[in-house]
Image (cartoon, rainbow, N blue to C red; front, side, top):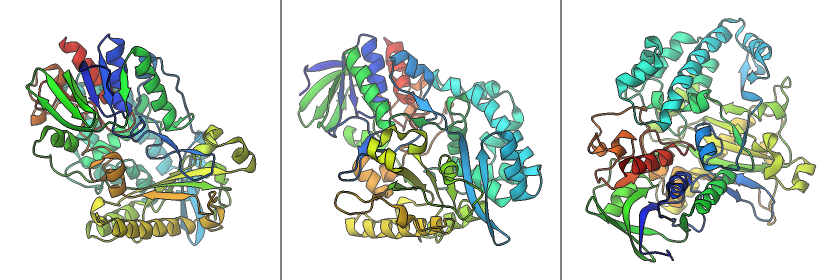
Length: 526
């Protein structure tokens, strides 16, 4: 039960963004209550022993870190660290009937050689260096703005200070830039994948939702690197919960919020343990959930588009491309069926209402970079984890009926693993570990599973379409554009109710940015 009847701030949802907000506000001397419906904090950023009797703590949902600002780690004194991956990616292919692939990583000389062997010249590597040099400069300039008040579109453009880059990434469909820059289908596909993570779109979608997704995937940390959380994703949220509690925040789990009432100055939050008062309410949940709690009309439906799979193996499978060590290939992002043409075909098939014949996906092995998530016996025996993220699997392909959802999910999983097997020298099934009950150590989640388990609308990992990181005057949800919540991108139509989750402007990913920004908005108004 909450210890008090009224607080300066009540935070709905104990995911990582809510915990960030709680820690900042409590450190500033505010009374803070966090209410979480599950029996644990962390939301989608948790570590779980997913398989019965097996000592492996997997990052069950979210699994890599790029957008978490070091500023938040420093400000909150978090006992948390990440580790770089030595290989960026490996993409298997078949050329002239011969298994081959593209390994990006291991130093510039090795990457240059890999490009030349795949494409026959240095042209694609030179274009790659130039393209990612451009995104690197963009990242250096844009990333620091994410923990500052929202810039206007003109101000962010001035910060970017490169009209060609602005036009290419903020105004034109990404596919145009990719096709102008690269010639090889496989190389084009590797670039495009960062625009399609959890985003159902084509390279030429006129809405530019693919551009927005791409932007968030290349600016993290000012470098675009995607790093491995040491101890698993739960290590971050455990550290955040500790920081919030040390600062004086109160966290109550197993407590579902059922309603929010506000007159714009004060609010009441009703949960299944009673009602508490608050000067401000910070909602670490999707805009759909906020509308439900307020008794208002829901926003337009959001839709996720991914299959999430966790596995534990007794060993890594051998590859048909014998030039590459599996320990390198799986330590970065292992792309499956993600050539440029393959991605478009998969999109068109899913858009027509059928499962992709060759489902695109990407895989990585957390335990190669951070074996601490495995028990000592598993490490000695050579066990490894695999995390698979499937693309172009929109929620519309699944039905709410539990049995139908499971059947569709199982068909998609089987097709996805069969696509992987075409690049392996042995079936993946032969490498799967088994749990204490003799079942293979593999679990899959459809978008509807993620909606049911985590409250992600339609399984959308970003809560809604990502927005460009500048103020949009047409966004009615911002309310009074002069207010602190609007200036920080966390406003709703109610002055004292703020979004602090992924649905805020500059939300999405494991970043803590919306939590930080909501806390800054509260403190700025006082």
